[in-house]
Amino acid sequence: MSDPRLGSRLKEVRTAAGLTQAELAERAGVSRKTINTVENGVFVPSTILALGLARALGTTVEGLFWLRN
Image (cartoon, rainbow, N blue to C red):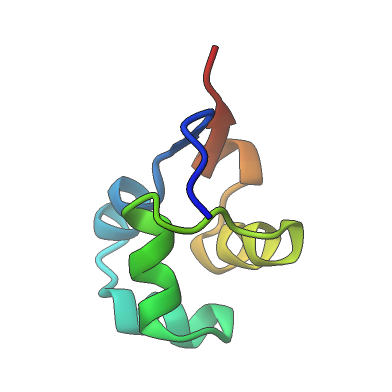
């Protein structure tokens, strides 16, 4: 479920790391479609997914996601 309060840098950080959606998905243990839906704001990641994505990209959850005003 999309939430306009959530901002995301996932795609920016993933591409800067030189990873495809499929490569990030494999590292995070999820499907490529999951990565796609999070990047496009269709799906709000769970805490576990957000932590897994941050770990896979070598950053923090706050480095990937933030609350908009």
